[in-house]
Amino acid sequence: PYLGKLGIGKVVNGSININQNIVVAKRDGSLEPARITKIFRFEGDRKVPIETASAGEIVAVAGMNDINVGVTFTDPDDPQPLPIINIDPPTVAMRFIPNNSPFAGLEGKFVTSSHLEERLYRETLSDVALTVESLGAGAGFKVSGRGELHLSILIEKMRREGYEFQVTRPQVIMKEEGGQLQEPYEELTIDVEEQYQGTIIEKLGRLKGQMLEMSRRNAMIRLVYKVPTRGLIGFRSEFLTDTKGMGVMNYVFSSYGPFAGEMLNRSRGALVVKDACTTVAYALFNLQDRGSLFLGPGIKVYSGQIIGEHCRTGDLVVNPSKGKQLTNMRASGTDESVTLTSPHRLSLEDCIAFINDDELVEVTPAAIRLRKRNRLNAGGRPVREGTQSGIMPKQYAVM
Image (cartoon, rainbow, N blue to C red; front, top):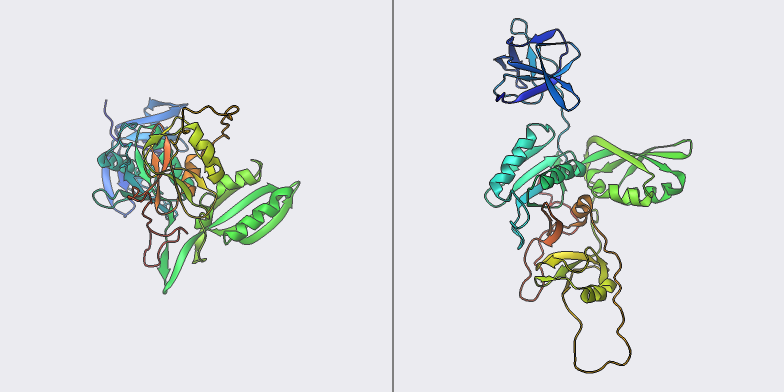
């Protein structure tokens, strides 16, 4: 039978029973009468119906029409709401946009803006740290969360469920107090072997980090830093690479502080496809000297898609389908075999950290692609928007 929403929580005092009358104390202080129709106890991954639950048990309760995180079920004769749990405010925001690339609708099951809206608002019912704001028709949704990893997990969940969409680079949520721009800071704790501490300290210095504590525990060095949230976007994968997977890091929101200044996102450009085609080994072999490739031969690509990182500043428009010129003349000697180096496969977190403000990550159940926001013009050049540094203009509180 349909039970509606289930409220999951811990019985703090007394007991609850089926058909018991209660009141729901909401976060705004209002009281709403309700009646418990079902109680479930968790056994492994199953919900087992029970008649009563006493203090200390974690149960799921049915019978409320409208229930949200943070409410208290209490006795109507003596209502005693529990203290409201304060949730840290969101510090990072991204735009979720319906997919409009040339491959739109080919790989996903849920592809429209209405599908995207329903799924995002459904996520807010179980994730209190997530906020969703509609930006109007065609503009997508601004999704704010507690960090890059928080939003990456949501993106991966939606991708596996069959959703197809695009996301922008994460932008930190700024504030302006007393005429001064404020940005969020995180308290970063790192445990790393002594041989890697120099590399990590140098990198955190470039990220405007302030060392709060440094101590030694056995053969490990513990570093505690206060770092702008901007600096930690994409840092996790670099940290694991620098420490060869042996380092441990975690961070929590510290406070808002003065804007730390400009921070470079990416110093190199991208290899951008000129026309829709299928990549061939001969063309990719000749492009290897121009940068690091993200894919191999035999892959369909479209105009404006990013297939690699340029070895220099500025973007380079390329043709990955260019084959070897064939003639009817005999060649002296044998042709050289084409040997490709393994492409650098980017994870979802790597893609989000790689893109600039004029680029997007296209997310589908079958693939994750990088692309320019705009198509290439007649001259084969993408039209740039925004800044490359990932710094938001001062007049905006968020991107």
